[in-house]
Amino acid sequence: MAKVDRFVGRRLLLVGLAVTLVLAGAGFARAQSGVAGASGEADATPTFSRDVAPILQRSCQHCHQPSGIAPMSLLTYRDARPWARSIRDRVERRLMPPWHLDTTVGIQDYKNDISLTEDEIDTVVRWVDAGAPQGDPVHLPAPLEFPRADVWEVEALLGRPPDFIVRSTPYHVVANGQDQWWSPRIEFEGFDVPRYIRAAEFKPSYPLGIKVTHHGHATLRTAAADGEDPPRTHLVGMGIGKRYDLLPEGVGKLLPPGPGTVNFSLHYFPVGEEVTEVADVGVWLYPEGEEPDIVTAGERQFYVDGTHRERLRASDILIPPHGHLVLEDQYVMEQPALIQSFRPHMHMRGTEMSMAVLYPDGRRELLSSVNRYDHNWQIAYVYDDDAQPLLPKGSVLMLRAKWDNTAANRINPDPDQWVVFGARGVDEMSHAWIGITYLEDAEYEELAAERAAEAGDDSQ
Ligand code: HEC
Image (cartoon, rainbow, N blue to C red; front, side):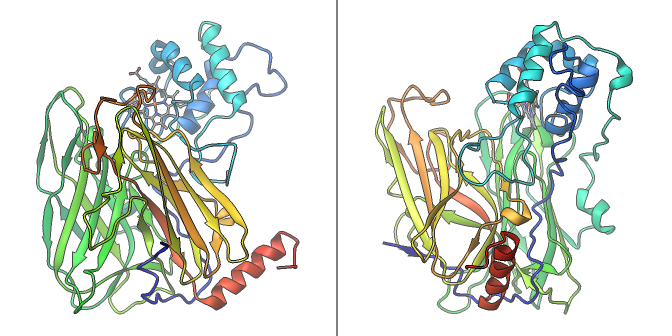
């Protein structure tokens, strides 16, 4: 049975048309030219200074720098040299940089695409095979600067501190052990009137919290109006490589009035030393009384496992020992929508999640397929503006998840177990966080016409 998106009924205010939701945070630079084998010297031995450093800058250093989340820095030749073999291995197997999208099907234009081209992989491999030479440092690109991890990144962008900060209660992450979760609920006084969120940032403690925090979400639950589900406002989700959501000027997300609780959902992994971690969530609002032109839903959670409020969540996840499972679910768009991003979430047996759309005219299109899903990473695939899927009213958004509980799944902790729904990495889940903006019919028409004109096709 088609599950109707329960959020679309609530009419959202949408006036303007500059519909770009920037799920920023990563700020990855787009592909640079002249990366591999510059100036026709493709066959020359690659050197660190000329050929490898630019690749590391674009696709690695964001994480591999002293205050980044990765275990070692790859800023300089001295930093990178001892890791050469390991770099070759990870890069060749496409394990680094983390980008688990099927690059052969669906949309391939993403703002935060850090994946390496075949040429770049080849350059890295040949560099290591040639003994990882440094080359002439005059060829080095100018070093990148990284924001300090203990300051609000959005503060620098908006020029003001957050309007409010919600702090989790502390959690003690052991030095060695398995993944750990922490879901504190923090009382939230709330506002008397509806307010609109311009940005929100998730800031683990510094310097160690940043290393143990794998991902985190903060969701505000306010009291329900009679007979309705309590409103859930997803404030911000932090995943590796993404710390904040900053909306363009004029675009906001509703913060419903009234008191409530902020529910944190924090996932940690131990890093070899004990860490007491507290997470802060900072929120930047539009001034009181100011309603942005466009109200976006932001990242919304779409379940693939059959969540029915009246039943136990996800009783349909039941994976036999040494077996597989595929689940699908679909959401009928009761309002036109524009999709900004796709972020699948499963656990250790999850291997694949895809998002497709069935248009009202019967066409079916695979949008994105994360076919090398890796539980250790939470990557939001953020579409380029022109590539954002535009769904007419009546479209069916189709999500499909796959699990592999066999020994072939290299991170399967125990293929002899039955696996059911649960919060631990050894249990399963399947949902996608989808950045979505619902549109009025007229806005949809206008956008569709613009796109058709750009495509040089006025038949639509
Ligand atoms: C989004 C963050 C991120 C990016 C981008 C990234 N890494 Fe990593 N890298 C990590 C983290 C976290 C680890 C440790 C966890 C793991 O091993 O997967 C890691 C581990 C590694 C390791 C293994 C280290 C060891 O202990 O053996 C290598 C090698 C590596 N990265 C190289 C690279 C290279 C080369 C790039 C770019 C082409 C890159 N990484 C891009 C976050 C990142």
